[in-house]
Image 1 (cartoon, rainbow, N blue to C red):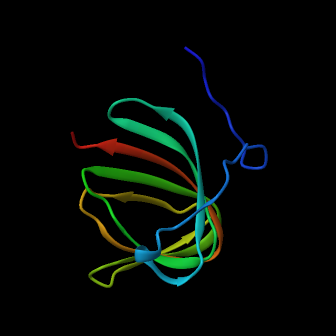
Image 2 (cartoon, one colour; image 1 turned 90 degrees about the vertical axis):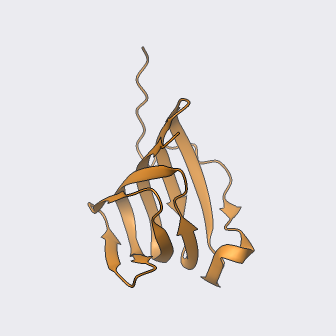
Image 3 (tube, rainbow, N blue to C red; image 1 turned 120 degrees about the vertical axis):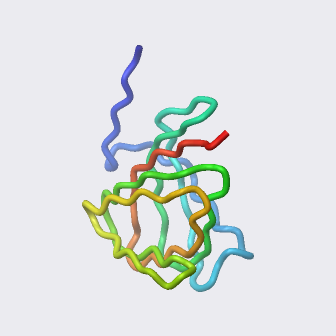
Length: 116
C-alpha cells in the first residue's frame, strides 16, 4: 500500500473553479480540490477556497474537516456559527445546510463518508 503525503506549500493544486453562481451570496469565490484518496464510500483531500460567501448542503454524506490555514465562518441555516481558523476541527452531519463565509483564503483537509 502506498502512502500519500502532501504539504500545502507543495500541493500541485488543480486550476480553481468558480463556485456555482446560484450558490454565491457575495464575492467571487473559487475553489480547488486536491484529492488524496477516494473509494466507493470515502474521499479525503485538501480544499482551497478564495474569499466570498456561498451556500452548501451535505446530501448523502457527512464531512470531517480540519482548517489548515485562512479564516472564515460556517453559518448553519438555524443561525449557529462556527469560527474557522487554523486548527479548527469540525464534524458536519449528513443533511447539514448553511453557508461558508470566507474572509481570508482558506485551506482545509477533509474526509467525506457517503451514507450509501
